[in-house]
Image (tube, rainbow, N blue to C red; front, side, top):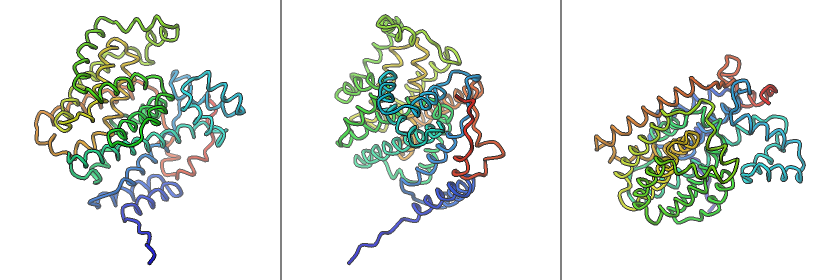
Length: 401
């Protein structure tokens, strides 16, 4: 007797939505998807993919030039353009000069597939990072459900909170600009999540460290925190003292590059508001997690690590900005899981802290969007109703290079 292949109704809806968005209209695909999700009681992890795809198409249409500022995405586009003209030998030599080898090897491969259009860099990495984050979500859900910490995390409400995270917590502007940071940290979170479930994880940690140097600091702290989580949390107080004394300035003496990194400011200047928001939000989220992850503190170790680094590099706005991105990315993965735990809603203090946290984050993200100068061509009247295939075929604006 042959076993028939059956596809779930919710998965079929997602596949049809992807087809409509790809070949008919992005807006029509979203409307179809939302209509059926609203009437569904339970979904599968495939439903989380559709919003990632839509966000990746939006990332493809990002329009930023050097007249608007020296943003990260412009440097990535330049590297993409250079690598597209290189052979294997010259490409590897160029990657060796850039560092972060795993990330730029992927860039090199994409540039050979679509050499004339760096926008596919944005689309591919937005999609890949989102898929890695979804894999982390599934691993953490498995860990929580195995330890009976919460109910099902595959309901429409979880998916809507997932979308809320990308749009409002991370902010699309950050997600589509700080590409390498989000990609590397997604690999790090996946490594940690797989380690929690006793699966192979070292390779993902290595890939993370070969994509962004800061993951080395996280790896060291995680090795300590995974064995002694409460000790790491206590060390955050010591790190705060070191940060207040500006001990981290010693690092600037090791090389000119380190000195430049420690003295350079962000494009929008030293943002003391961000530094305060990050510190307060970390403390409140750690408190909320303590009500859910009461035993081994495995969910909290990454938050402890971010708090430690933020405290140690207290007066380094450029670094604090990067830690903020890490914090919001991890919170985007955790929040849909946290709402499936009735514990935080039964405790008024925890609920209040979460409301304050999201209020602070959204305040900062709106402020950043207003001050920064980003635009996405998909929101013009000429493309909002187009399909993804039509958008992909639009000519690349060469003034971006």
